[in-house]
Length: 241
Length: 296
Image (cartoon, rainbow over all chains, first blue to last red; front, side):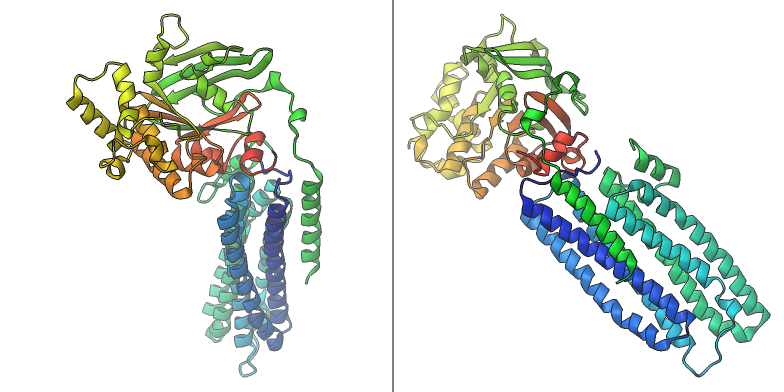
């Protein structure tokens, strides 16, 4: 049974559910901004902008707490069942992953501060060459799952889940290249390790986005597709579509 | 805020507006009876009762249509659905309580173990001893607590002598979780008890004749939450020895006490399944709409 689009008899319940979903989407938008700003600060060697990203993480943390509080009171006061229950449980899990994506953006910003501290030389461009393609993939995945959440679109969620493999492969090749640079020239090791943390953060964003996509499939289809093989996920998600 | 956020908010507002615009189904709109088939598995491995193609008519009115389902031995099955959906009618078919309504006609087959309960050879009084019933409002006889429980076993000639009857009355009250509260006042009228105690007295009365199945028609709707909790705990204990069918308007109660749930709507059995599946992931839209409070 897909999710019902009819209104509840108790209209206030619809309003509360819509508010909760909007809050999660708003939080998603902020997290997207954080990633974008973190990458931009890195590109522009802008330590001040990076510090701003670090400071803004608190707002996202606060939103996570708010969504969880609202979910608990909805469960206590409205005793949601069926798709309403799945919606609330999924949103509560989604914000956990969004908050962690926010933490990854903060990590990238911290690495920017560390790298461009004004004491050591800037890293060479080749060390940073994998950051851009990986950040594009990660940002696309996050954008895709927020889109899927807004439209309750399982096909889109499946697309996001599938995208994680590509990001993982990019990470593996980036890692190999970094190791080669480090072996070629030991003076790059300091910077290379910072870059390693950055690409690891991007890889983790992909994992969290995949989790979010799985919660969306659960919310719409009622099937738990965590820890299953990709072909099972696709089959469960698209059954009856 | 980035353009993404604006875009997403616009999308969500569109879906939400669509949700609000669409009115819930009114009962008049639902007319596709011919194509309605029960969703979910109607059979169980060890059925105590089986209903097949049960139809009930009140005069001209076709109240129950082609209902088929199994009631498993030692399970609690809950019948849910909006008022007038037929859940109580189906419940009353299970011990032929509908026989008392002159214009009511039941077609189809209902079996208790192997016995067709609508067969001519069936003694209805015996049947109702095997399939007992507890009603919405506690309805103790205007007699003592003791006599309320002793009445059934006496008319069925189940016991021999006072000592045996005393033992049976105490055992039934004990099973109904009431003995401790009433053992020193067995000769006081049943009506002197609180509502929750009266309902447990009615359950004691029902189990005194050693039934196999107990039908409960909204047994807690007149009780406070504490008395309700006691009945629900009792239902769970009784399941060891009896099969229980419960009709309830409280979905939370159905969720708490039953292992399987059947959803009825306008005389049709719409969906049946494991309780946990019905309340988290129902397959039929009508079930989903009912349990999430989307019409009615």
